[in-house]
Structure formats: structure tokens, C-alpha cells
Amino acid sequence: MILFVYVCITCYAVYIFREAFVKLAHLEGKRKDEVLETSHRLWNNFIFRGKPGPITEQEFIDMTNNEYKEDRRKFTEKVRKDCTDDVSCFDYKKQGFVTEEEFLTGCKAAGMENEQWNKDFFRIFNPVEGKIEVNVMVEAWVRFLTEEDSSKKDLIMECLQTGDNA
Image 1 (cartoon, rainbow, N blue to C red):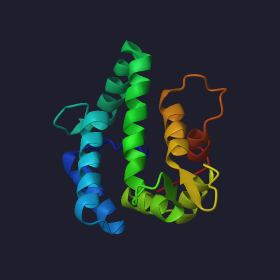
Image 2: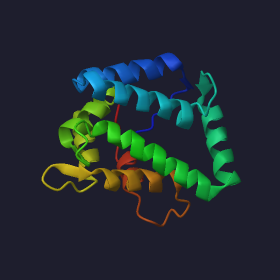
Image 3: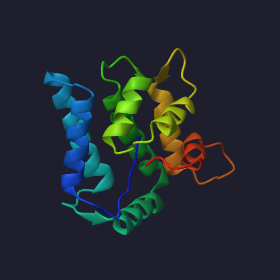
Image 4: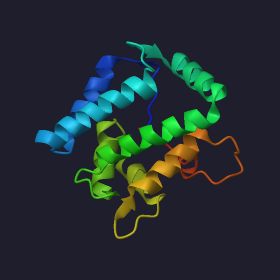
């Protein structure tokens, strides 16, 4: 799941991201509606946590930490479901994998303009024939968002530490 926390997250910023994504992906009809609905649900559930928004970065961090501390197993299950839903939006044709083109479109819609970094980010998932299985991406994001043991290999963290993705 690609998570970008701004100083203040607004509902309008979410709207801009969702619209940019479906436009860049050339999604139409039922698939466009599914992606917009999934994205709307994800932002409301995972980022805003049911609040009407806007929220600050600190509010997001506090809500996430509190949820994690209350019940780590439940939090991890929720994150896995949210990550599955999020990554499934990138899988335009619902084939169980994400292509480099689909991945780069998502990055661009999210405002990540450094194309070389985005390509390197795609490669951390070890694509096979230019594709990454959805579950591989999901599990990498779940580990990044829930693992406390910093000695365990974390593909997302490694990539984020390599440089600027803006």
C-alpha cells in the first residue's frame, strides 16, 4: 500500500489523488467505480479512521499507535485487508499481479515524480516477467506497517531509505 502522510491530510487531497489515479490509469465504467469506491473506503478507514478530516500528521500517528497498542493482531489483520484492497486497485485487470506500468501510474497519481526511484521501488519486489504478484506486495506493506523487529528484512523500509521519491 502506498502511504503518504502530509502535514495535514484533507478530504480534498484524497479526492485529487483518486481522480488522478483513475484518469492516469484510463479506468472507465465498472472498474473505475470499483477503484473509486475502494479508494474512498481505504482513506476513510485507514487514514481518517472514521473522522471527517482534515487530520494532522500527528493525529494520524497517534490514532495508528493507539490502535496498534490496543490489539496488535487485530490491527495487523485490518492492515492486511486494507493493503489487499489498496494493491488490488493497481491491478487494473484483476489478474492477481501488478505490472510496472500499473505501479508507475499509481506512484505518479500519488505525486511521486521521480520515475527512476519509482522503477527502483518496483524492482524491490523482484518482479517476474515484469509483474509482481498482489500478495507479494501486500505482505511487504504489512511487514512495513506492523513489524516491530527492525532486524527483519523490510523491503519497503530499505527502498524508502535510498533517497528522494518526490
